Image (tube, rainbow, N blue to C red; front, side, top):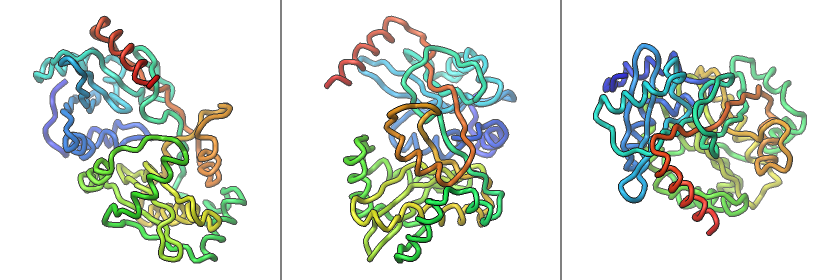
Amino acid sequence: MEEIKVQQQWNDIIQTEAPESGAFLHSWSWGEFQKATGKEIARLGDEKGAALLIETELPMGQSYWYCPRGPVGEVGKDLTQVVNGLIKVGKDKPAIFLRHDCPDPSGQPLGKEVMVVQPPDTLILDLEQEEKMLLAKMHPKTRYNIRLAEKKGVKVELGVGEFTDEIWAVFAMTAGRDQFRLHPRQYYEQMLKELNSDDCRAFLAVAEYENQVIAANIMIDSFGTRTYLHGASSNEQRNVMAPYLLHWELIKDAKKKGLKAYDWWGIAPAGAKNHPWAGVTRFKKGFGGRELSYPGTYDIVWHPVWYALYGIVRKLRRRK
């Protein structure tokens, strides 16, 4: 594999080979965003596919490479090509392992299965249907809540230019309520700044009620798909059902822009009991769509001793 340094050449490969969910993770712009956060990246590709690799540094001069939902194309079936590509372009640092998310729903994963990085289960809404058909396929309660939000006077704004203190407060409130860790605020601000090209564009969308932001999403448009990457909602005024109207306006806007799919980016696996995403999964499924599942995340280990030590340190940190 060769290092690809021309944006159009790279995106042409991704346009053809990228998975149905998560194509934005392979875009040229996503790589530039990762560099802006201080990561080293490598873009390797050939006529068989491509791999965007992101380096994570570890203590004692060690590191590992991560390929988000990739490599894409035929190269994903033989990861030795990726290893050889790294050596060829001079990025043969003492990396302990290669982590990757299998991009083929029916593929045979390579390596040791580990905790997932990207959500392996998602919901894809086909935007090539007419609006009335999209509404007809929704759960009746979802349609009712959209109308209720409209009746209550919820206002939606798409393409908000600034990640304000008010919006950040809603994200922080959601993280506290649903018990998940946020990235630092600067991470989201950097994302909105760097992902601003035709191949991958991130933007904010908010819902307001009585001049107060009560719901906010970070969305990504890339390779014909609009992805719901991050979302937040206030503990206040939940009875006006703002998130329902916010997503419906985003769906209609995506259709007008000619996008083909709306990716809800993460639902609970089929048959899972007491899953932490059970509530948000019910919300997302209320809009309809087709379920899609990927195998998960796997590690190709190059240095077993260092990898074992890495695993011990990770377990100790989780206990704190």
